[in-house]
Image 1: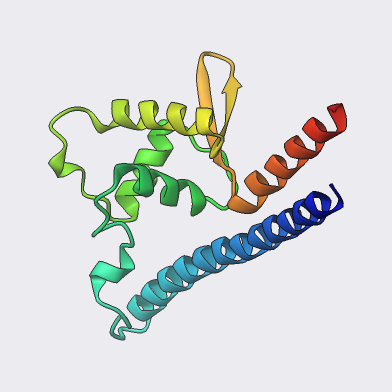
Image 2: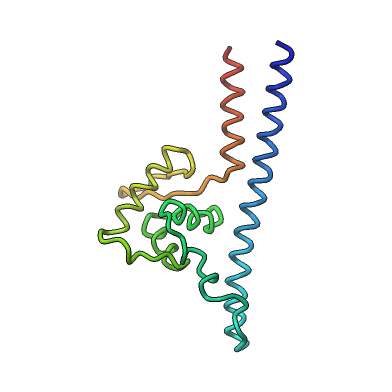
Length: 157
């Protein structure tokens, strides 16, 4: 049994490290997106060429996965809570191509946000007048919560 305890400690340590590294990656991705946007704005102000093709200035221009695009839009919100309409607007701003959808994309965004909330990747918040906002939950926070849940389960035994 002592061996299993050692394995459990190792597992917890690996999960903590994954959470830390994942958190750093998310921060760097947001910082990179902000720097690219600043480069674009400053280049226009200076009448200079943008350092990257316009395709790269719109990070979602080549994204095919609707779920990934929604995730990216929420992540780029830097922890802010967004309504489904704001998520759609953010996706458009980031270059997502909605022309391939014959139906209303907003309905799909609502559906995916609800699924993501059930999975625990976003945190929904209900407001008066039947308004819901969603906030991205980073990998670090999810891993930490999973570790806390596992500890609570082990404490119950």
